[in-house]
Length: 172
Length: 170
Image 1: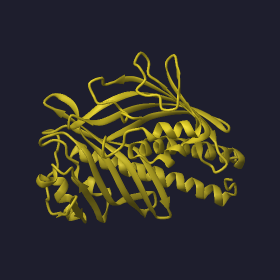
Image 2: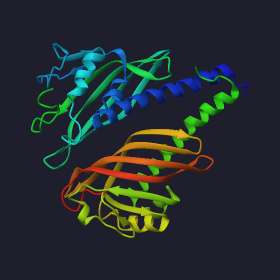
Image 3: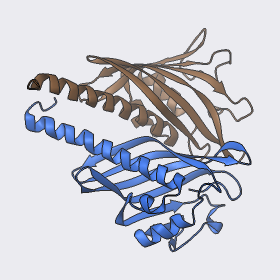
Image 4: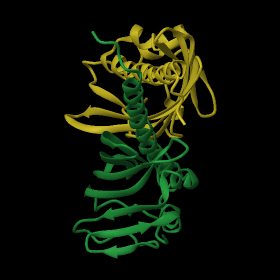
């Protein structure tokens, strides 16, 4: 068996670390949205990052400072993202968990793409219920601090309960 | 900038392995609990390990104390004997069939110790219908007890949503 090449080993190690860092940011997004940790949630994005919420046939739940397009609402840059997260529900008014499952990550040097399943669980009518599910389509960039941040996240909501309270505060 | 010396690469690899080993312990916790493997479940903890379950206010008065200690938010079970007493009274298959889903672990390793938070969702068969019967968050401390072997030193189970009635527990 040939002696392993150090450079090749380091490249493999770095790929594992990159995937781990992307998963870390995916999980950070979920935990911070569920506990109203706005600064840490914003830190998941690049300063010019985008969040594109696709509602399909449903009317958008809210606009915040975003731009309406044919299938949803696009929120671009720190100011618009901050407005979006500021209006999101959080405990104790609404208790929920965004569950991210099966991230499929493709690394391409300093950038990457991923698709992840999302299921949101809420307390509805006094008991735990699945509120929504769908997919996140993400574009990533590696940052100078070693973190990977979201350049663009497209949220495809594929199923959502219509008989539950709205997902956002009424004034959002 | 990543350390590309041999020593640096080994250190980076060990960190990845430590996180992977902790996740293995977290998976083992769920699988052993759901399969009714009490001793193996207790093995996920250090000898002096703690599980501290914070119940919803309406569930707290009827929470099972076993050999644990009641406090304002829940029941704390410390040490192998108390852990085994707790798990002995937990639902067991085949009388009850359920799965604990551990999702989105956020783990930080520091030498031979670590901390982490993760989501928990419990799914049960309720009268022939699969239901989410509880969800919440684990807030953990871990300790390395041997090569590749990490155990839970303390687990706080924050139950945030629960099914009414006898289901809807940790």
